[in-house]
Image (cartoon, rainbow, N blue to C red; front, side, top):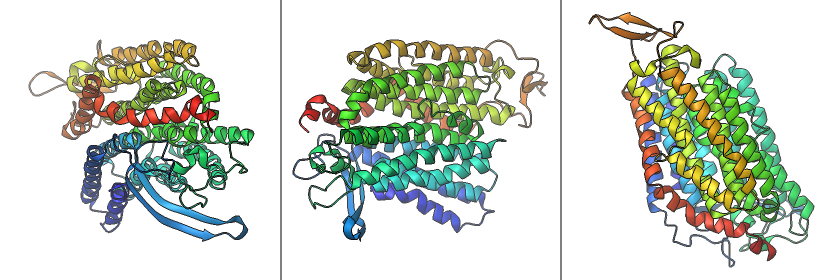
Length: 544
């Protein structure tokens, strides 16, 4: 089932290859059907996953990471390297509670991205082939349990995202695409070096061969004592942790590696901004949780304070930058930097409350920010501008749009009753509970204040008051004698249409439902996070 959910979009891409370029509607429908089928599989995996089951083990000692289910494990590449031993790479897939949550998020955002792509007219065939390749690579990263396989999926994501921004983006698309590519590639080189060093430092507890298995790597007792990344080589383990952390931090993006994100978001077409904010940013923190922290728990424990500091910087710096923006899309981009800071803060607490909050924030940020970028795309399609000061009094003319924006922005703000509140509250509970991050959490609370400032201020300027004299739309007298808003080049289309409602309503429902009853996600996360916290605890590390 995991192979099917990973490669279904690629299969759709191969089908699209056989469809004539002129058949744009067929191409769109094929992509949508693949995305919906992927969503069905994601729900089946979520329903079939049982946190109470033991899942697979990493040998006689068991797996410290918890229950991996739906496992697929077969030999992939096996080569004899002479004096260097052999190269053993496996096609190894599996999911735990953390992965299942991200699988659901990826399938949801990918399907909504296809609907958002319905208005793409330029080179439709090439666009959807690249889009489907990107969807497969993202899903592959979340289910891969072999480090080499994870790296392959991670690198595959670079190619379609580079072209999707560089070809279908805005006026400065080439600059934004190259910047995104170089930043991410820089982090990938770091990851590759650590991956190779880990391979020659870890033995599979069953076969006795070197392995890329992330489960075996996280079983600390299996490290070779004289290997370069063995527990006795403290310095090299610190170096490996820092290098790997930077590789993932670029994707988050964490300050000061964040500068690629606003450019990429502003220039990317709306569906790609949705994918970028909804899923790709989560791969950075997911990589930390799945690889960085459990492989080097003693270094993580020593680095909690520093990670918390960077989380606080992200929260406050991102919110202040968002407050200064006039471009609506750039404001949402900087808000993403701020809200991913809450994830870093929760992870730095090192306890179950903080980490569950961080993972829940990843899921909620994916749905809320996807909604925000869709809403930016809706208004830009009509008015051909994203300048906040160009609007005014929109609530009178677009009441449905204004209602959805209000839900999305208050969810981003963390209003009780909406999903963003629960995750941020858990993050702060965890951070305050940890002596290491308690004072950092006190400072980070300022991010909520600044978040309220930029969200409420923009809401007031765009939707309340009266229409601006230089607005991006005109009032015209209709045949019924009443004034009607008319956006330039949009032929009188005003409020949300059926396709846009199909994109936004599911996200609104999820945001409200998970704000009232978060247990469908929290219940899935808790068991896996508790086992991860045990791995990272000082007591466990002292027994290594």
